[in-house]
Image (cartoon, rainbow, N blue to C red):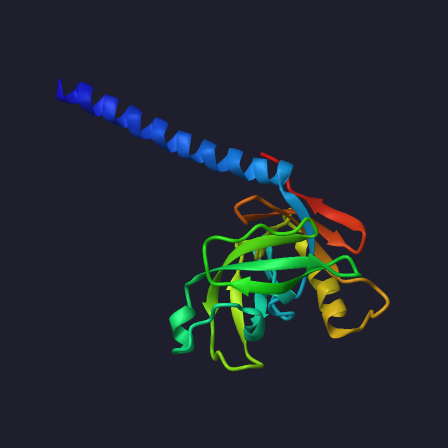
Length: 202
């Protein structure tokens, strides 16, 4: 009887794990399929060390939010906001990239207008809350996995663009699908108007 219970318990645990993984995959696919698409300008975190294994580590101009546009910053120490959830409202600029227009420390957001989108993240660093300072935000879209052996050429080209060696070329960009809850999922890596790699739904 004890052995039978162990087998049943093992099956229940396995089914629960499969169900949870399936829920995560379906949720991600739903955002990629139905989420509002935005384009973010890529700013490499470290132009000397972009490629980590088979993924490229990415930063964006929205990775640093000016404290002036955050509506409800506390008046106490900056460290108090580290780890807080934040909703950043983005709007498309004339160059096609989406940029931060306002932000709020919250898990909720008000209804964005049709030409705006709310992207959820988490404050990772806040050295100061004084005017002119910025806070760092992680959106969960800071890694892009590439096929093995494909990253070195991208890394070198990003170095050139970041250094201004090729000013006539448009920056790399990331297409992101944003769900109704503000969750972002990377859809594709863009070189100007050319799609280099696209994420599969499943």
